[in-house]
Length: 183
Image (cartoon, rainbow, N blue to C red; front, side):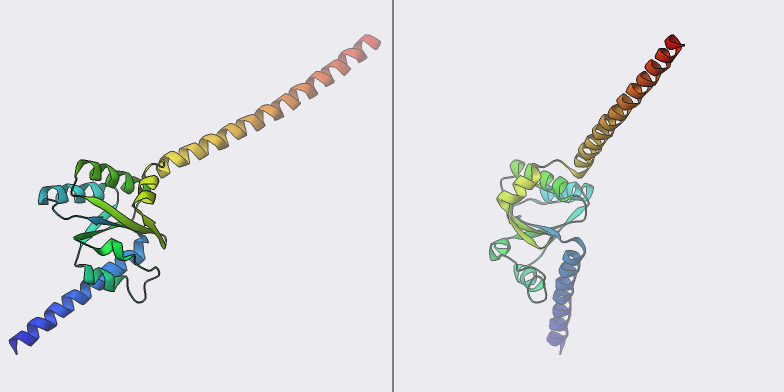
């Protein structure tokens, strides 16, 4: 009887882990799968802290549970190469570019840490695409670039309108001077 109770508790916890992984994916839609084999505890905690700063978090789970979470009912098919070896799932709630930059930098420092691939808005991305994503400017920088383009366009528009007004005033002034000379 005691073994049955233990198996039921274990089954309950496994089902709960699958639900948590699926719920996390459904809420973020931005996931990166990483290889964490031979990564020491200090480095893993360092990674967790860095991810927290980027509004992301890592979940380490058994590959069978990850496959089950991304199995039936998932919006995107999970690539099998993502769930080989010791797998960590990084759920990104913030800017994916910032998190990918941090992951690429972390992978450069730690040989045992590898980026396998990911899912971004229901699109499978391999390691090379994630590295390309990391090279993009962050959302804050892109917003600044957009504001700069808009500001320069508005400035040019104001300059053109100002030039038209100045020419109009000069024409009116010339007509006025001509009338004064003619009288």
